Length: 149
Image 1 (cartoon, rainbow, N blue to C red):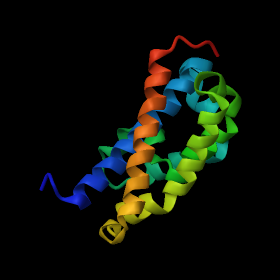
Image 2 (image 1 turned 60 degrees about the vertical axis):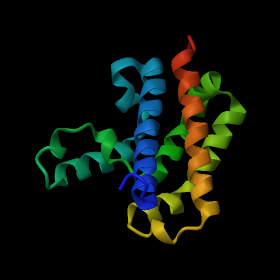
Image 3 (image 1 turned 30 degrees about the vertical axis):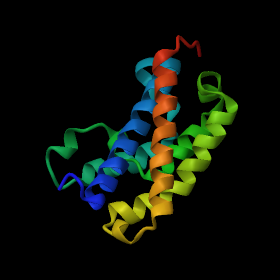
């Protein structure tokens, strides 16, 4: 099972989403502290996430952070809306590249997470892996730097 490309692609997307959440939370926490969710994320996104959490069918899910109920496309929207906060940490070029990559990853992510990943080309899967590598570099940059916001 470890060499199964379907499982590997799924795990990579799961890692990517968790890494994005961590990146967003870390950067916004530096700016807003404990209020990062309310100050850094727009009200419509917070409402959507709260509704999804409320509707969760598994009781374990209802105890989770609202951030875990966000749509994939919303990660790019949050970063884009808070570009002024992310840019001093990651750089303008890196932020623009991250936003563009995330937007291009939406259909790839959806295909993989909705069990159609086995039909993706090697080129498409390669773009997904490259995007994960670039995101890892940005996360290391955030965690390794003593940035002031």
